[in-house]
Amino acid sequence: MKRVTRIILIFVIITLTYIVYVTFQKEPVLPPEQQNFQEKTDKEIKVGEGVISFVGRSSKEVLKTFGKPDRIDPSRYDYEWWIYRDDLQQYKQFGVLNGKVVTVFAIGKEVNVDPFQIGQPSTKVFHIVAPNSFVTADIGLNSYRFELSEDDLNVRPTVRLNDDLYVQLYMDKFTGTLSSIRAFDVQTLVKQRPYEVVYRGELLEAEPITEEEQRKIEYGEEQQIVDITNVIRTINGLSPLKQEESTAKVAYSHSKEMSEKGYFSHVSPERGSLSDRLTSAGVHFEMAGENIAHGYMDGIDVVEGWLNSEGHRKTLLDERFTHIGVGVYEKFYTQNFIAKRAK
Image 1 (cartoon, rainbow, N blue to C red):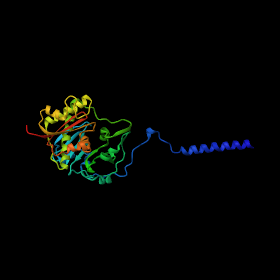
Image 2: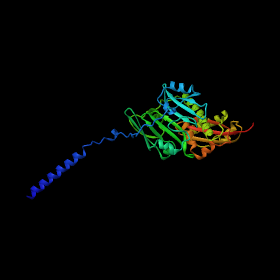
Image 3: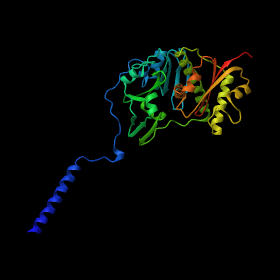
Image 4: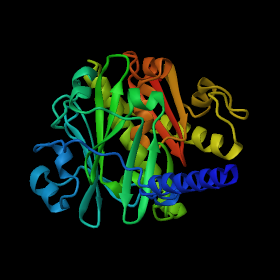
């Protein structure tokens, strides 16, 4: 009898185990490579008729609305920048690729960046959108997840407004306001990679550039840095700076030397301090200042980075400076300021 009872007990245990196993296997678990990590957007944000709305539209519409650009600069990311710099109160850059706007940058008190506003307090900006610690994107079967640091979230977060429109918000942490704004389509976001990224599938890359193209890109970034610096100075009630060619050559030489010699410092092992370098180049000045940077996405990104660094900000917004020279070599950036004196 005990033996029969034991057999029945074993049979019951095996049966229950099978039932539990089948129950927990009803919902199949996808392997990691099949999981979709895209976050859901609760609602699409309407962008109105501001410059952000031009992402995805034709370059003909840009010409019809704003006229011919003041300058066209190449970029590192396949598109050309159409620069509208005539009015520092509403400075705009439209990135055009194959006749289509793929990115926009805007800064200035009067530029329309609906649904946002330049100078808007961060509390109001983040009432419109709520940045997350990650941003996801899909292109075909490829999936990308950008990881934002705490600093990224505070001063340069990116949010998705709809399936093919992402906006990067450059915040001025010293005033707690929106400094400038950049918008991308999904492919441009992935090419530029503003943050650390993990991905599944292929990583979309910009086309390789030649040495000749590289210098044209660097020159364009130099001009953009000057323009955006002057917009920021104007916003802060200061006079715009005049470009000084000899000072720009000193800045370019320093950027190139840092890249080629593998160092990052205001003091050149071969040419000395900023004062030494300017004097050797025959630049006449009463006072001088310098900002340097390395590894930023482009000239726009580096100026906003300087603005949020106390020491660099003081130099950029020093009312005593009258002239500026900027030099870019690869991803090394040098910005030299001088107050001129009579020869």
